[in-house]
Length: 224
Image: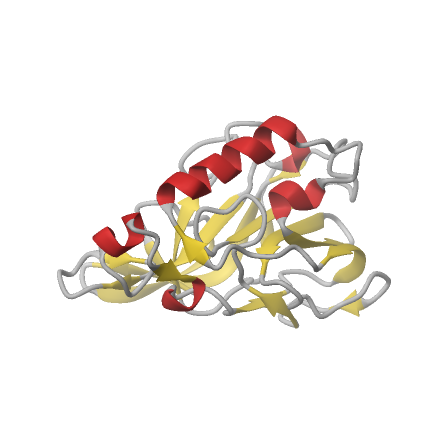
């Protein structure tokens, strides 16, 4: 099946820390429609010319001194990648204000172990999320900032419309955006659908080079 072309859900410079451009299934499972899912984290180069996602040192990160406000992605706008009907929204998951590698790993392990789809706990993994049903696919967007999701269930949205802000809710080790296409609204029974992005730029040989209808990989710095 050819990838479905969608609009960029973000603006700015990002790395796809998880991408179907590197492996399928991208998250190691076909469950929950995640076969072709992406995770995007906003990055910048530090004074040592290394990529980082926050403005603190590595030692401060290990000492839990990195706040959400110290990260580059937190609060960045999220845009709908498709036209469609908003079918499900969760908007009240609280975010952990400080980031720490050990606590984040422990939190992720706990949620994976005790997660129950039947008890309506999608938000335990996805945090604040919304599901949009389009003509030929559904999109699941997760880990939004608490209270930032603007559409309500039953609203119609268009591609490129502001729908929320990037956050650190749910199963998240750093503020990032999870986005995936599925063949139906119900996550439990859904199958993932391949998708690519209509247009973005890739940093290659010291310049930004435009690409169209492509799939970013983990080795690329991209700009939506």
